[in-house]
Image (cartoon, rainbow, N blue to C red; front, side):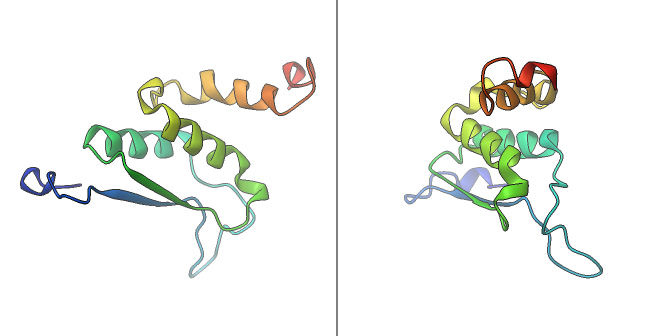
Length: 108
């Protein structure tokens, strides 16, 4: 992260985060292999270090990355609401339910 002496950079700082992997010996182009706890932890550290002006997410194929994109955008809106230890138990059910008709997501 940023050294203390560099935190006052006049343009601020940004974060560029990947949720897909393309490289040898394999790639995860059509699979979501990013643990939500890792994404949450890294973005929370970013926010805690004062990087709060620009967050960029490299998604690759959008369809299999809907959950990490939703998590990333929710965190960008209100980073203080998220805790890596609680992200799957509290946030995942809310995202699943919000994407379905009333009551459908409750049976997942």
